[in-house]
Image 1: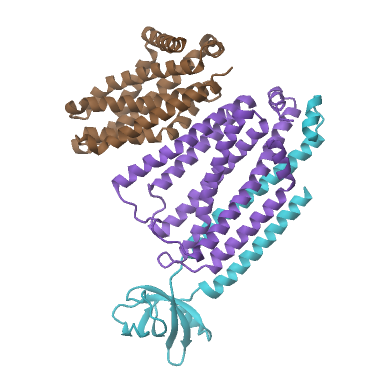
Image 2 (image 1 turned 90 degrees about the horizontal axis):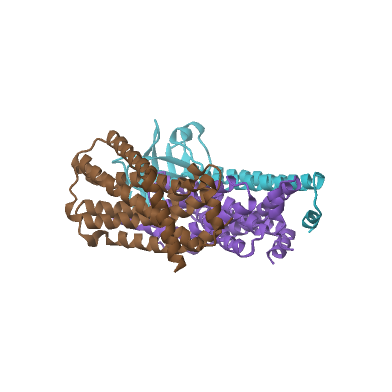
Length: 169
Length: 225
Length: 241
């Protein structure tokens, strides 16, 4: 029985490590700031920012990949200079994730890439539903096997001769 | 020859019991009548809506009515341990099964034929020209329900909670029958040309053939003392 | 013969568990990190790597249940019956999880939790048949009769499944075409690697779970026999030597 708990403890530790790794990946590559947060925190590194492209503000040549527009958050609106690969989903009134750097002096967000908006909640939920009950189910089964085995070894209630053959096989 | 004699004798026995007691048919009839009433309370229907919904209501009523009849078919054998004698008799089990299927088919189709005019009256339907096709659909779908249902009736009568288990086992397996019966009946009631819903009737035939053969093959394992 | 196989499998079952876990780990890495998001569906496409293998595993489990039921009727070996019972329990579990993950996937892609699509309905019917199978087993006292009836139900249900699928497919496609079909989408290598890895991982893990669950059910019937339940003793006396 103790072997079972050790084994499943190891599985649990690995699972926790994986979740931590996934969380780091999420922080670095998936999580994004809103325009309000960018204004408040003034990050001096490459960040990801989510917002809505305001209607009527998109200017520049999309084919060349040099565009200016305004990105609206809940309250604040920032002006964006985008210079990067031409993107089809850069359209007005569309929610986007911009990858770039905030220039506090010019109050301009210099973006160099556009990522699609990700709804990781569904993905996370599906993997949670898929894997956690599976592990729990398996754990209870293995535990039950151990308990039953101990109980059978310990029980001296009634034993016809042929049952010994069955048990020892 | 013994084989067909057994079928005939078993079916005749059930028929005789039914003619003397009239338990199954009358309980099925009144149950279905109540189902019709409940449905007409639940939906307020004009004739247009009735045409869309009536096939579904019809088959819900028929399916639950059929389950009552199927359940009684074997639970009646429990009195005086008749089931034991059926299982111990040297007659081929497949023949006993087919006799039961024949009796159930007859009861349920009779109930349907009595009930259908009431549907026609209550829901203002116009069915005269499609009556033969409708009767064919009733027959084929009821045969599908009876083959699987008689098998499960024989199975559930020998276990605990038999009244609950029969519909739980039967209805998921009868999903194709229900879909095909509802779609074909709707086609016929709407006066569509036969070509538009012929494939549903073919599906019913396929289901009937497959499950008559399969049930006939496995029933020995169930009617085994 | 089966007992020899099961005993061999039991001795090496740890390797199955480890191999399944390893495949799943690799599949998770490829599915969640290495593979790119889909052009149309975005990140949500990653749900496919857990949903589709789960659905396939549940069908695999039902196939094992069907073959095991035939085998039981052939040999009447109680261990084979335990195997069938185990496969049915696992199949119910995998079907339920596949339905739930499918529902989660449907929400962002089809914008609904549930649609009466042919495959969804077939799986729901499969779930109901298997749940009926497990219920039937709890309502019978005699283990030998329980095994026999359950085997019959499994065989009849398995034969019914293709008919259910065809009927539901006709029923839906005649009414309205499917809004999004997976057919016609060519599957590229980046998608295929995690899909295959997860599929293999779940299948191996299924074998492992099957062994453990068969063992569990066998031991509990053994315990019943030891406690002096006469019917269980009579049933177990037929164990193939």
